[in-house]
Amino acid sequence: MRWFKATGWRHLYGIALLAVAIFPILFILSASLNPTGTVSDTNSLFSNISLNNYRDLFNDPQNPFLDWFINTQVLAVCTAVITVFLGAMAAYAFSRYRFRGRDAGLTGLLLVQMFPQLLAYIALFLLLSAIGQVFPALGLGSRLGLMLVYLGGALGVNTWLLKGFFDTVPRDLDESAYIDGASHAQIFFRIMLPLVTPILVVVGLLSYVFTIGELVLARVLLGDDVEKQTLAVGLFGFISEQFSQNWGVFAAGAILGALPLVILFQFLQRYIVGGLLAGSVKG
Image (cartoon, rainbow, N blue to C red; front, side, top):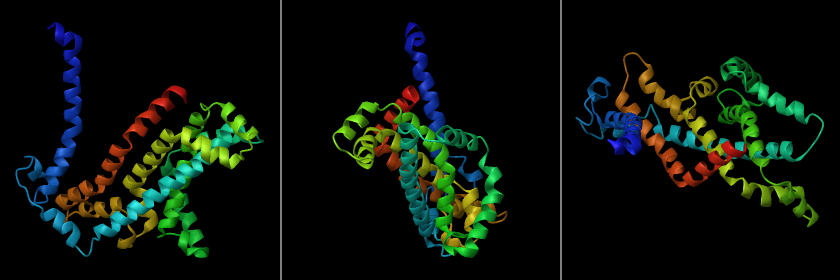
């Protein structure tokens, strides 16, 4: 009884949280292996095991899973890399320099984040429609245009997050390097970026995860071209129709689509923990 009061309840609490976290994964994995393709038949976990859903996922010419997967990965990786680069440059400027409009710019970035993105969907649609008449590569149905929309939406919050981390780096490092003849670009790339690597990884992963899971903007801005769709939009088609819902194939695609995320989190776990802890304490 004494052991339970001291530490035992913590073990039970941890086991309960672990069960809550693992059960959805087991359920979706069981659904992907169930050949019936219905939700009701997956209540008994792993009662029917078959790879038919995975075969159907790759053999259906009307639903090119590989195209969706490649589109999503290219879009997510490019968005994450450019987001980190632009956010780091903006945060470095706001953190290290004093210029006219600095406070107004920071306040503006903060105020923009107060409004939900849902309010901008119609404006973004009309904006890309107008741009597409001049530059078709950036208009509706363009993956490049969708990427620019993602970049614009993430720049504000990422700038604030990165700025708080840059503020924790002593200015003496900048001044010493500048006295030794280093340029601003050398200070930024060779000194500052290596010191803030954990938060750069966190920002990149957050952007990557958001891009992979985003559905509404991708569905609205990419249009009906099946080959240009992202993984979230493509998989949603398996369960969106009233009389042709196939949860088994949807679950199989979700499992395969989540594998890159799992691998990234495993390899970058050290940076994620360091970035989140340092940002929460020093930001």
